[in-house]
Image 1 (cartoon, rainbow, N blue to C red):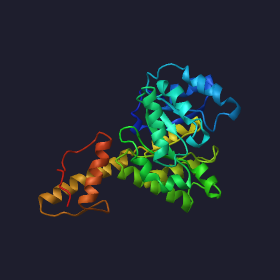
Image 2 (cartoon, helix red, strand yellow):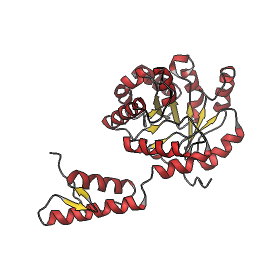
Image 3 (spheres, rainbow, N blue to C red):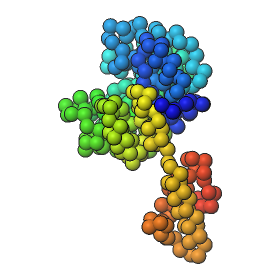
Image 4 (spheres, one colour):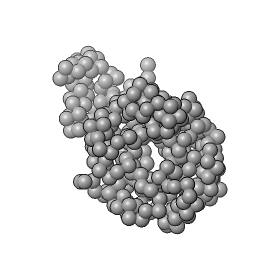
Length: 297
């Protein structure tokens, strides 16, 4: 492990939120020391017999001064969601809402946040067939309250009655639906699902690449050993950024001579490619400032 947490990242920029079970003070303390954000789990990682105890344990943690404490509450269909939010929202920066199936789920969560005067934001997890079909409705349900969406492929696979395979056509379809809805709704890039194995670094790396290619901006982690891989995997390398800069510089030079297309290291570069390159540089604080914005055609 080489991950060291130095400062909290805005919710929209977190790439590797780490799940920890409620009621485990040792794991929570360790996670808070190394992770960008920690998701205390009241849902799948908490036994049904200890749900009420876990809820009160989280409620008494005190303020989230570091802005890194997220809490996954129980889903709306359990009947526990509202009470969870009422109890934990005052000590959580983010409420992670599992198995979100539509606007009514978001309305319930927002209503509970209003009831306790909490300014927590929401990260709804889309992880059912109904949720996938309603994903744009979910993404648009509460502007200003929904920080970003997330995808849960384990429960989605269970709902679809198929074996959980991160790279399956069904998983890829779900990824694309969530990423496109996020973009249409003007949300930050979504968070990708955990993977089904902890002992397969190749599976993790492959799945990071799939998520990044589909337009995701991070990935849920379930063990500290995954943090480095996920953080690095969603960060463009110096080689990538160098190529993007060369694309912009060459394209601007071509424009000066009256040409709107150029080849850079074998890559065809026109307006969309150059504009994407500049946007990627800007996202890393490395914008060239050379490419003037165009009006949409």
